[in-house]
Image 1 (cartoon, helix red, strand yellow):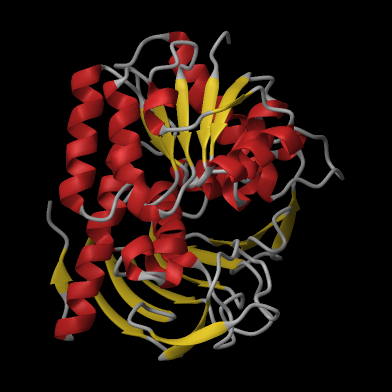
Image 2 (cartoon, helix red, strand yellow):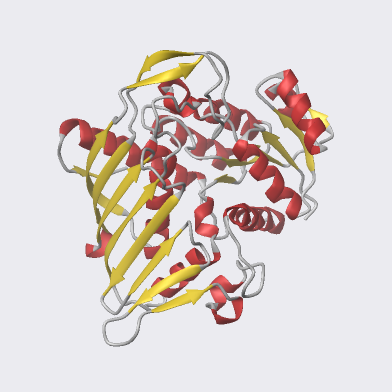
Length: 380
């Protein structure tokens, strides 16, 4: 493709981006971490040639075509803005920014600069999520009528569990819904081709006081041996949202980061007039297909049995499992292929800055609904 990347952030998700880029043989020119020491350590351990010392140094590197923003949420806007102004394309982790004023500004700036902006809603890229999209779009389950599901985790189950996302100054005013709920919302809107018209939400901070470590902690790392201090919590551990979509589709989502035993259970079911589909991220190589007058079945991931539109997103043959890391590869393949083609007016199959703006708008309205205890219309 002759495109080259740089990555900002070398934590859990930054390393996932690096792995995905390497599997596509996309050169990584350098990495910018949270400190000079962390940047240099990441470059040594990962075999990356350049350790950037600042955002300005990265932005001025003329060898970089695409910047991957994989930092805490409060940095997404300034880093993405800087990359765009330097003429780079951007793949930004979600949320695109902290509020819709910032996301709208990034949408406009990308258009003005003639650059491509994408947001890492990578869960679309499970092969069987692509298959679910293809089946719904060709009418295999009739008209979608009900969409329901959950996104449940347990990594913040104990008051001693800590991560930067718990701090609203770093992660934003919303947490569970913004961090994982938007993945589910993006999937359902994309699979069905229908946006949310109105919603009614209930949010809760299940653990009102946590033990904040007196030092840095990486995502999913244990904090047992680190000294702590009490910290009051304001962001959501839990949320349930009633949804009315376009075309009469109704839905409900439950999100939690305090559900013991649920490691990363993103599950959805879409019920239509002719059948149903269900997918569980913890068992990503099977898609349940439900019928009323014939036997239900499991479609096990097999490119030869999948729809033509979805087949290309299964990199391995039947019996060879694909999972979370593979979703980054398929998303990046779509993005870099689009940029390499050079026609930026063409239809974009990947989640865009406009997608990121829409999901941020949903989060803002979910917060309003929960605070005012009422249905709210989705506008803007």
